[in-house]
Image (cartoon, rainbow, N blue to C red; front, side):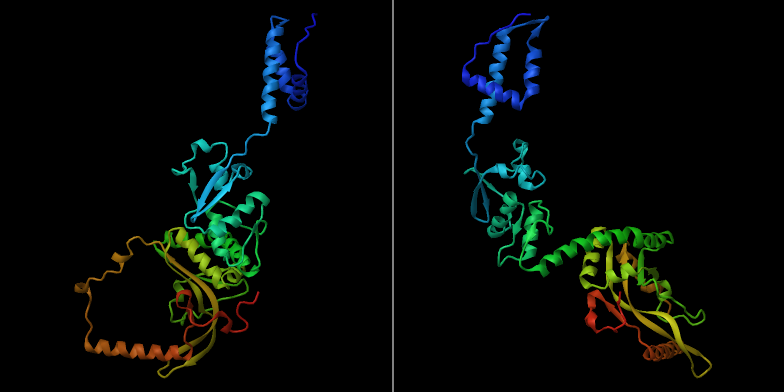
Length: 368
C-alpha cells in the first residue's frame, strides 16, 4: 500500500486537526469519497481536505454582528436578530429565524421593521428581556393586562415562569382567567354539553340549567309543583361546577367561552331554586298552597336558535279574544298568584342585572 505525503501548511494542519475533533464523520466521508477503484487519488484528497479546512476556518472566524432595527410605537430598537432564534415559537423567532426569507414582514424604505402596532415601546422594551434572560419584569406604571396583550401578540407564553411583577393580585387574576377558561372548557364538554344535546333531541333550541351541589336534593309535591316553571329547568348535580360559578369572574369567563362556541342569549348568575316543600297552607275554598324552601344556586342559560326573531313574531289576526267575564276571571287568578308569591317570592339574581354582591347572600351559601 502506497503512502502519500500531502504538502500542507502548518496553519491548515491545525485546522485539519480541529476539523477532525469537531467533524470526524466528515473526514471519514471525504476519505471514502476519494477512493477510486481501490486506489487513492492524492490530488483529489488534497483538494477536498483543504476545502474542509477552510470551511471550518470560516465558521471559526467571528462574523460581523448583524443588526436589525425594530420600530415600535415610534421608538427604534437596534438588536441582534440572533437573540430571537433561540425562541422559534415566538413571532420574532419566526420573523428572524432560518426561514426569514419567506417572512411576510418586510422592512420599510429605511430598512426598519415596523412591528407590535398598538403596543407601547415601554412594554416592548421589557418584553425584549425575555429573549436575553427568559424573564419579563413588568415595569412600574404598566398594567398586567397591557403586558399580557403584548405577550399574546408576540406569541410569548404568559405564565409565572416568565412574568415577574410587584402586583401579584393582577398577575394571579390573569392566571386565574387562563385556568378558568381551560377548566370551563372541560366542564362544558363533560357536564353541560350532554344536557344540551338531550334538549336538542327533544326539538328544543334553548337550555336552562340549574347547578346544585352533590348533597342537594329536590322533593316537589306532584300535585302542587312550584309556580315558577322550574319543571322546565335541567338539574346538574356538581359541587365542582357549583364552586366554580361562585366567583363572578369565572362566570364572565364562562360566558366568553360560550360565545366563542357560537351560543347566544347567554345568562349566567345566581337564582333561588326550590328544593323541597316547607309547609302546606289551606286557603279559603279548600285550595292548598305549598311553601317551598329556596336555596341560592348558580344557573346557566343559553340558546342555539337561528331564527329567534321570527320565532318571537306574533300574528295578531290569530289571537283569540276573551270575553269580559273571562278577563275578570283571569284578573282574579293573577291577584291570587301574586298573593301566593308574596308569601315566598323567588330570588333571582342574574349576572347581567346583579344588584346585590355575593357576600350579602346567606352565610350557608357557597361553602365548600
